[in-house]
Structure formats: structure tokens, C-alpha cells
Length: 490
Image 1 (cartoon, rainbow, N blue to C red):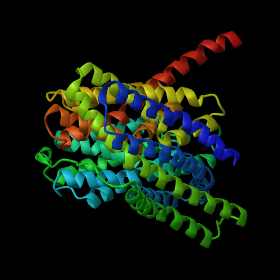
Image 2 (image 1 turned 30 degrees about the horizontal axis):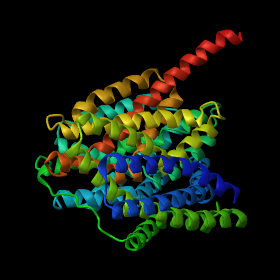
Image 3 (image 1 turned 180 degrees about the horizontal axis):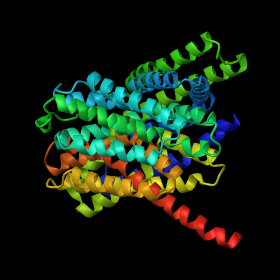
Image 4 (image 1 turned 90 degrees about the vertical axis):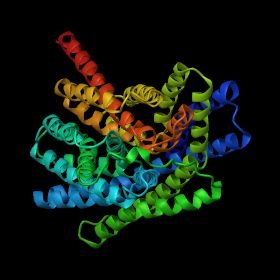
């Protein structure tokens, strides 16, 4: 009960920031209908309760399974077992990720079926599985994570020249969506489990991060390869993503089904563990089952709140602002919303808590959260600029952005490189993929066009990019402060 109350306290602060800001905008500028405000407040309550219960469930159920599997596969001392096991686990978990399923449905709709939802999900999941496998082998062999990131993004830059801007937006958005509320805690725990068994002293801390970033790169590469086999230069003429008009109860049932399907792979993995010799004891098993029940209930309530109230309000606010206020006001509102939304993402809490735990408190949780918040605000603000100015294309931001990120990668401390690339996926969670995506679609509609692929997609891409820059910059500051302190200690 004490742990649950602590989760309630942490989440209450984060969610209340978004609620208060939206209500202030409504009273002072937008003046939405009361039905939207009512849905938004109900959705906010569900997000608050759901996120708190989900985070408690992650601690009790999902994290122990991931850590256990990582340790078991690494202890086998057979690299092929580790590689194949991580490939299968990465594919299964990604295929069930709720945020990726939602994105796949949206992509299918706006492309008129040119890109099928299950085709996209399968291709992205295959890329995730392959890179999770490579990342695991990297940990046990000690290969430089900096070199691996540079190699992977060099491949991405080359492949990107052969696809359209519309498909490029889908590609990077898919990599952000796949590292969501289910994938992040499991893969982070898997990484810690593998790193904990390493015999090389002192490297476990640094190797506990980076797997999510590598997995995201795998999703980008596999989706770009898909783009080589389909014609991607006429996707911008697709349809419009319409707002969902459902009652809270209808949304609850739909989300319960989606979350239930998402949890099936983890339940299957747990059953397999119990069948074979590396099973959990009775006490640990009951604790894990309890945790998975909490996670299911929490994530169902959270997704219901997001889809039942947040999306409609986000779309309405975006449309009104672009039609009735100057562009710089839209930019400022987007920046502030971006800073606040990141505080309510479930996976952010999982990552930042692990950062503090693994580094024994030397990297403070609030430092990472502040860096993520500022980066997310800048990302949303730049997305507003791109949407409101048709001549500005997504690669105008991506190319210099990734050049800066990869340059920082050379100089930043190794652990910050891993944390930064992990955070890129973590920042683009379910709230960003729903509330902020709806807000951007509202802005696009208010511009006078439609929420086509070129306008509606690409925001998640920007959100995933900025933490790479902000957190590695934080790493350089951290490195400078350490060097400054050392002479004084001597």
C-alpha cells in the first residue's frame, strides 16, 4: 500500500500540470464545449489512477521477468542461445506493443491500405528483434556502443535517400511508437539482467543502457528496407484521421481487449519459464502474477483515459489555436504542452528510476526528467513550425539533428550515450502518440489542409530525436563537473 501511495503522489503532480494548463487555455483562449471538458477531466482521472497502478505492476511483475530471462540466457555461455532468445523476445514484445498497434491502424487508414497495419507491425517488430539480439551480443563482447550507433545511423542515412518524405515520417514515427509502455520496462529489465552477469568488472553500469536506442534503430532500418519494395512517393494523398467518437465505456472495453492481447506474450514467457528448470519460486511467482494483474488494470485505465478524453481535446485545441491566434502563440503553447506531456509518460518513470538505481544515485532522476522535458518542448515547438510552413520538410530537421546527435556521441560519456538513445524511444510514449498527435493534426487542419501523412506524422520523430541531443549535452556538462571536482579532491 505504501508503494501505491508513493506512485499516486508522483503521478498526481505530473498529470495535474497538464490538466491545469489545458483548463487555463480553455478559459483564456479556446472556450471548448463542456462535453469535451467533461471527457477531458474523466480521462485525466483515469490516466492518474491507471498510470499509478501500472507503474506498481511493472515493479512487481514485468521487470523481474525481463531481468530473469536476461540472466538465464547469459549464464548459458552460448552466444547463439542469447542471440536467438533475444530475437524472439524482441519480436514478440514489440508485436504486442499498444502504441505500435495504434500507429499501424492510423497508417493503414491514411494510406488507403497501401501500407497494411499488420505488415508494418511485423516489419518493425522484426527490426526490433534483430537489433535486440545484436545489442545483447554487444554487451557480452564489449563492442563499443558509440561505434555501433554510428554504423547503424550511417546505414539509415543511406537508405533514407531512396524513400519519400511521407514514408520517412512513418519510418521514424514507427521506431518511436514501438518503444512504448509495454516494451520499455521489459527490454530495460532484460538489459540489466544481461549486464549483471558480465564478468568484466565495472562495465555493467554502462551496459545497462542503450538497448532501447539500438532497438529503435532496428525498427527504422527494417521499415526503410520495406520502403525499397513499395512505391512510397504518392502516400501524401491519403485520407484524414478522424477523431474517435466513443463513450468512455466503449473505449474501456476496446482498450481492455487491446491490452489483454498485448500482455499475452509476457504471460506466455512466464509460463515457459515455469515449465523449465529456471522457474521462479512460489513466493516470487505469486508476486509476479499480482504485478501482471496490476499492470493490466493500470494500462487499461490509462489507455482508456488517453483515448477517451485526451485526443478529442487535443484536436479541438490545436484546430482553434491555428485558426484564431498568431503563429508564435501556437509555438509557445506547443512548447509548454510538450514539456508537460513528457511528465505523464509511463515509460519515463521506468527509465529515470532505473538510471538512478543503476548509477547508485550519481545521476539524479530529476536531472534526466528536466532534460527530457525541455527537449520534448523544443520538439513539439519545431513540429508546429513544420506544420504551419508547407515549405519546411521533415528532413530539414532530421539531417542536422542526427548529425549533431552522432557528433555528441563521440564526446559524451558512454553511459549518457546509452541513456540518451534509450530516452529517444521512451519520450515518444502513448500520451505523445495520442494527445500530442491529435493536437498536431488539429494544427494541420486549422492550416487549411488535411491531416495527411506529411502533416499528421513526423511529430513523434521530432520527439524521439531531441533527447539524443539534450541528454548527451547533459552528459558533457556532467563530465566537465567531474573533471573540475577531481583536482580539488587531490
